[in-house]
Length: 492
Image (cartoon, rainbow, N blue to C red):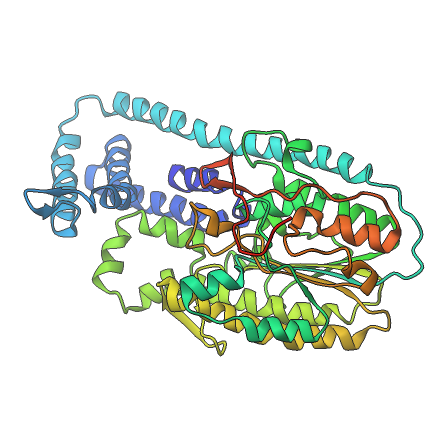
């Protein structure tokens, strides 16, 4: 049980519980089979259990040790090679066999190991329970914040509002300078459709959950989320002030399935998800999930994957999660098109996980699972997004009598730049009525997006906040460094 439970506890914020169901059952089944095969050899349940345990420990620890030793060099030779480690692991299994046979009191040994095993399970179990408890507490706190939003003022017109987050879509100057991609043709197409381009915009935070938690609650995190980690932020993304305000105003909330737990509004009045399997059914579908792939590579199974890089096993373990991700993103664009058919007024929220890595799309939309380099991988994703977004925008504009409000926004910049100011540069484009466009400015940041929209549509007086950008590194999410805007001509 431990390998699956520990991996799930470490990734509880990133995956659904259903992702762990199949590997949990399979690992328990593996344990039972190993025990059953060991019993006839030793003709004693205690010795059989010890041999089965040794085999399982060696199997599930191999990938971890291999990954740790892979970069280690001794006497000019890389230590982390299968030719060395597999031999050592085989010797441990072979030597363990006579050692277990010679034990005088195997029952006492198995009792000790059982106690150790139970103790091992305590930590990840406590982590999962604690995480769930904190998320539930955050849900309650977020509901209170959402329920105390600014009183709704009647509006003469109720335009549809589209908030479209293109994950990790960076600014045109970074695309040109770092990737050699001229994104001006796409931006010009947006301008021809009436969009205002915030040429100097930066994200307020460097992570998706932090960025959307801030923009959807129209404030900086320290005012409503004074914590030292991000646990529970998904609740504030789901029960946010913008959504609450517009629901009270009579808007229908339409959410697109993102495939990312932190940004899934599955409780929306209209929830558009890919046609196909439910989350529970998908957990038992052929092909490994991303969670299962990570788990398998942490075992001795990595020997087979490395020995047969083009085999069916590789397709099952490594390629299947990429296909799922590819289909999920393609379906999100289709769902966004379908959202235009929902009667208004409506708030449409779509977080689409592209151009973020992994880079699975060619610029013409073909599946390219082997792109690992940021260039051309990342620019190809941008060009594919551009080709999908323009027809979708045209359809949205054709479907409504009242001109809609549309925001196209990156939640942060390119995934390549995780530790410097380039991480904060984002696409930020607004299609709003002319009276509202006059209040927009080149360096506007997402925290002020809906302050401007709600003030302009409903006559509220929220005003704008100072535009600030806080860079933080993975693992130190709440440890911020202020990043000033440095693009020429973007003076306040």
